[in-house]
Amino acid sequence: MEYTNIFYVLAGVLFILGLKKLSHPKTARTGNMLASVGMLIAIVITLLAAEVIDFKLIFIGMIIGAIIGGIVAIKVEMTSMPQMVAIFNGFGGGASALVAAADFIKNAENLANGLPILVGSFEINPIFYGGVVAFSIFVGTLTFTGSFVAFGKLQGFISGQPIVFFGQQILNALLALALLSGVVMMAMANYDLHTLFIGIVIISALLGILLTIPIGGADMPVVISLLNSYSGVAAAATGFVLLNQGLIISGALVGASGLILTNIMCKGMNRSLANVIFAAVGGEVEGAAAATQKMNIKSYSTEEAAMIFDAADKVIIVPGYGLAVAQAQHAVREVADYLEGLGKTVLYAIHPVAGRMPGHMNVLLAEANVPYELLKDLDEINPEFEDCDVALVLGANDVVNPAARHDTASPIYGMPILNVDKSRTVIINKRTMNPGFAGIQNELFGFDNSIMVFGDAKSMLTELLADLKDL
Image (cartoon, rainbow, N blue to C red):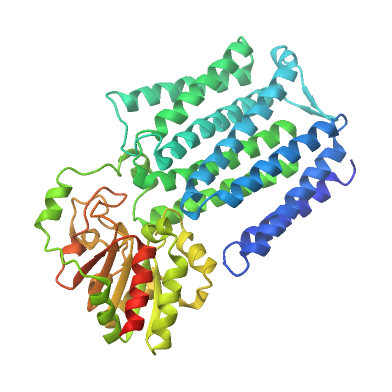
């Protein structure tokens, strides 16, 4: 089709505009719609440009996909977003691998004979074609298995503890070497291509599993972001296999945005990507219970906490994963609105990795119609704690742990944290004394200016609001 590439460029522009608008909650829905329209254009123009296509099967597939996607989108909870992203990454990588595999099977005979590969009216060098096909299958399959291991860890189907065994890194290196050799051999096409194809699929699948299981649950969101990038790389590679500019553009955008998100999360934890992948942070640390027993934990009721809030002038709310689990975003807004009605200043402190993904807390609070200008990032809010009367910590743990500043033996040492301990009073809400994702206890809980109010965040905030109104 003469104007196919023009429409692909148009789709690419809409993808870029959509990504730009996704960077702010106020424009995120518009951005999502623009990107969706771009994808619709890319799909329609691809179907119209194809010489042979079964529109009936395409339509049936779209209906089935739309029904499944709609049901999942409605039913999935915000706390399960990382798991859903992991599944999407896995399916994206798997789809790229399947498309590349189907094209390889179609052109295997020409590849084996060293003949040019015909894609539409274009001829592709067989060495280039074999290498790109093998690379696409490798990255797509690795993404598929790795993403589902990540999903299992986050969902609890697989232990969140790092799973390691003797010689694991050596085995991974040998598999990677064998895989690289397989890619080169397929590009040269001097061997049994079907055996190479099966070998690449099996080794890629194993590597996806073996590279993901040693990573602890604390770092799994970072891994999901990285796998998201892999799924984009696999799609772009498949675009080169098919000479489809739309797939190349969209895959490159996904790959780049995934790497940017991974970098943001690593910076938020002050750790390198290599440290995340190989350090196995996230298991429970022995002695955590004993460390808790040594702390001077002060447990208060909501009535006592209400009196502290009543005497405060400035309150900073620190939302964490506990707030997300309890779906307490509306309850916290109601408490904040009441405090503001009493003439108090209320701000929200947002850590880059609070919850399980960057922006997780922003989306939750935006859902509860919390004004965006009240949401302050780490650098902006930290100076505010110096003259803060009450810091209310709702289910956050590692991102407020002072050990990150001084304990060189801590797995979170060096991670930028919210300086809640500098507030006059820190009120911490948790359901239990279980450690956070990093598997360590929070020394903040035993500080002289810290008090604990145990319970589900939503129930606690509801009771707190009632007690405030009774004062």
